[in-house]
Structures are given as C-alpha cells and as structure tokens.
Length: 344
Image 1 (cartoon, rainbow, N blue to C red):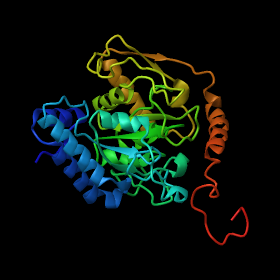
Image 2: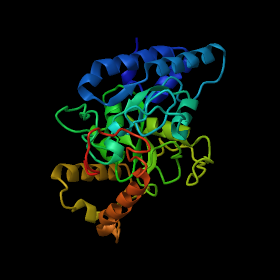
Image 3: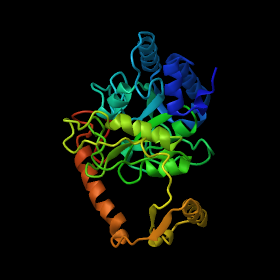
C-alpha cells in the first residue's frame, strides 16, 4: 500500500482517477493514521469514519461507472469544528454545544465534498475561536505534532496539526485575526486566509463577521490552490450576502518564475516588539531566496500599522459579543446546574 500521508492532494486525486489505488484505501489509511497518532496530537474532536468510508465508496463507484471524478477525488480532509456538516456535531469546542447535531452543511464544506473530498472529521479549536493556541478548547488542548510539548497555534490549531501530522491531506480553518496563518506557521504547513468574500461563510459559526474568512491548510502550495479552486468553483453563494464570484484558477501560475516580480517588505514589522531573531532571520532568508531567483525586494510603509492591533481589539470583540449573545444557556446550550447567580 502506498504511503498516502506522503502524497499530495493532486497525487491522491490522480491515483484514484487512474485506478492506482481506491478512495476507500486512502480513507482507511487516513482513519488508521488518526488512530495511531491522534492520541498524542489530539487534533480531532470527532472522527466521522462512517461518513468518510461512505464518501470514499461513492467515489470508487463513480469511477467504476465511468463518471468524471472531482479534482479532490479521494483526498482526506478535515473541517474546523465551527463548520456545519450533516451527520456530525458542531461544538465550536464549547461544552455549551457539546451535543449539538448539525442540521445542514456549510457551503465551504459542501464544495469540498462536491469536489470529491473524503470527510475524515471535525478538528479542535479554541472555544468559539477565541484564542491563539488551541488550549482553550473545552474538551482538550491540541499538541504541535513536531514537538508535543508545544502548542500548534490557534484558533484553527486542530486543522493545522491534523495536516502536519499526516492524518489528513487538506483541512479547512477560519481566520479572523490570524487563526489560519499563525497555526500554519507554527505547524510548518501552508495556510491561506483568502480575500474577504472569496469563500462563503454560510454555515460557519460567526466570530467577527467583518473579519472572518474560511481558508485551507495543506502541506504544499499546490494542495492549497486545489482546495481554493474547489471552494470558489460554485461562484457567488446566494446564502452569504458578502460572498463574491471569483474567476481565478489558483493553479494557473504556480510554476511561473518570480524573476521581475516586485515583492514588498515592511521594515517596521521586522523591528516589531517581541519578534525573535530566529523569525527575523527566517524572513530575511526568504527574501534572499526570492532575490536569488530574480525578484526585486521593495521596502513599503503601512502608515496605520501601529493602530492595527488596537483596531482589531475594538472590532472583533464587539462583533463577537453580538454574534455569540445567542449562546446564553437559556434558549439553547449547556447550563451548569445549581448556580445561584448569573455570574456563576
């Protein structure tokens, strides 16, 4: 059997389409990887083995019938647990929603399934996406697969860790103030927060509605590009008034040379308080690598950068308080018994 955790999404989809192996074989290998590795990493809140095998078997039947397969045929994927998927719980890593069963499927999830992906399960997160380490989950913290004594970042830490651990090939997370980009960095995978409106947020539990966006994790830029093609393939989502049609093939220019390209560098960020020498050196090395391939580094200024964090901490909490006010433990949700006061 092939080492599926070493294959890219493109390689898995091509292998399934060519008959080199079946989607069911890939699904079983992914489930075995979760069984073997997740006891230590704890990237998942729930594993949907029945859904995974049913989807994989449907892919294999479609191939046997001569049907054209999707670009993610047989690719194991996982979804952050703030995204609805019928047949699973959607808990947002909160005890308040511990037993909530999804009654519909989020558009972003459905588009991945429409592309042929195999749903392996739902990943851990900081509770209601408040956090940057995946330690505030009500159920358990997630460990960084490279060093389980360290955090994977957050709030989409489970999705990043699942990809880094080789449990799935691609995953989805949500990003309000860094919740895809930061765990991708900490786990050594590729993560993308797309342009606002590029990916539908319908069916994703809201945090800060003017900042939230759904995006993919993968072990390569190509895998993330494949996922972005799937996420935008359906055009504008009428169920999300902020979504916009995206007429872009994210795979089209992956192998274009960078020679002649101008790459912006923000010197003020390189001198930011708290930035370690290790990170600064890594960014500088990336710049030199681009220059070696013919790119031009251009220093740019972001005049309002000093106010960015303060602005975020006004906008995001205000929108979060509004969005999450419905989870009050009265109309719906877990409520601790024996409390004498509202504060308790």
